[in-house]
Picture 1 (tube, helix red, strand yellow):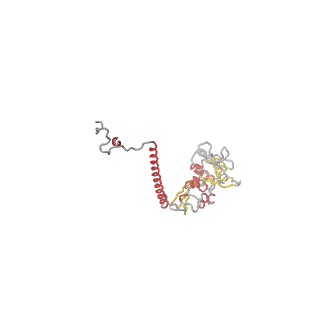
Picture 2 (tube, helix red, strand yellow):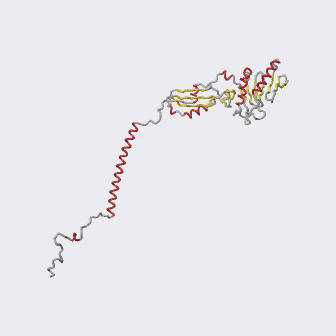
Picture 3 (cartoon, one colour):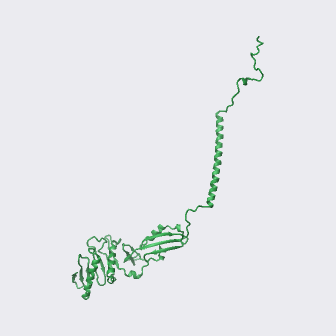
Length: 312
């Protein structure tokens, strides 16, 4: 019975089954050990590094090509600058064009855009005779310089660096400068000035010269012949503040050694009174005059060489 058992103990009905088949087909799985993961990460890193180097190399090649093209065909973003070929110089005074070469330096090969027009303007205005200056580029190749000069009203003598007397010009605003380009005839018509001495001992700055210029202008216009004899204007008693009491301007002429003007009345009224006095003196045979004081309120005092004093 035991030996006859056909189904018990048999291992295969067909002879082709094994213990592997009885256990079922084995499923394939990846190796997930730490060493395997590390190797895979290393492979990925090498791949990314290779791709990075590849794209970097491509970028460098493209940049080199673009840079080479730009070098051969640069983009012009500024106006081509030509050398300065001419200087257009204009002034409302007497400065000659040759004077420019003593103030500014302009090389032959200087281009339009190399010129610092603001520095050049400052250099020009640093000269005492120049009241204001403008410098402009006029493309393609010209530089335009315009000068406004100070108005000369008087002249004065100063002691130079070598101890010798030197001539200076006084402008309407009190600027003192060494005149350039003035004809001798123009200078000879300007009266000399004795400046006010400040308590510190110096005469700079000259203040209130515009009032003196007004007096000179009215006298030149209303009494031109008499004005030609005005030799010197003394500001010893005029500090420049016409509101202060006792401020007077003194003029010296061959006919009237001391001619005093004040600020209580207009210069026109004082010169009108002076005209009356001079006509009177002429009608009396031109007796010697020592002083005419026109600074009094509403009248004038005349002192003759004889000592006699009369009011007008």
